[in-house]
Length: 378
Image (cartoon, helix red, strand yellow):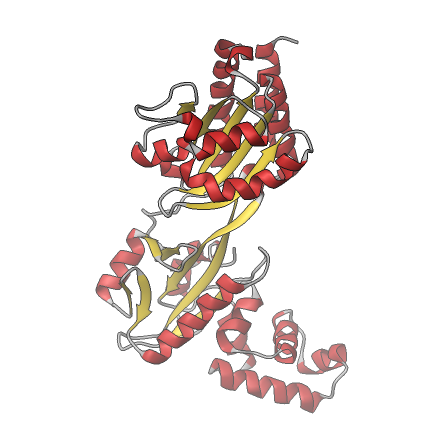
């Protein structure tokens, strides 16, 4: 099989890897073998904050490779590819044989790390566009520049890297800045990064929320405390499977707002899924909530109250709900009364309508919510 045909097959596997971290790593190992490298390196870096998010080395299972990731974490800010990307956002590739003016590679910590870790006397790096923060960097490390068929190897590296960048972009969702929905995007540090056009319009008309010093705040101390607690819970949740939360914001401009707070998980190729952002959607009416965990979060229902509510929304009567849960009818009615108090409803019908997103809104209002019904249960 020729080099071109092997590269074509590799590109197909990269596109089909999807969110499979193992398939991505296998494809990168194959790339480095195809190029004739002694080792390879992949890194995920937030250039704007100059923060290394993840790093992986590919090479022989030797002690220097095993410790190389930790050493790279201490040196990544001196990686010539990162330095070049910081100075020139349009830079895409770095060739270690092309030293910058005044650059003494014999004294440069990164070049010393490169030769001591792999060992390698030459490397070639690529980095994705700054429009796709965080940036993905890939480097091929060769034993020596003289042993590399540079024309073929570099051309193949660039070809595969261009397709790799496209495949990575397919695994990530862009923030819908032009959406009429009221959406806000918070970065991993809690700072507001983006607002949709719908959010900007809503906050201009009724500023119950505002962005102050890149932080999202409310107009009352009580609401602010509840918002901070909700955000802390989402950001601090272990793993990547955190559920969305919903809170209610009381304000002077009319009916309360509901904020649905969702962790956004994106796939970053060989590094798998990483939580990078939190999206907040503002509803100025009760949204259609197909997931009852949002109802529980919004109204503070207990586990037993949730059992009663779930049973009722599935069409059970109080008697059949009691039999299903193995409790008395009076116990079920006591839980139901507590649910009525918390949700400010007064009948089972009104309660079920609330959970369906209808509440006291007219059918015309409900029809306007049809687009939202598939958007607030991600």
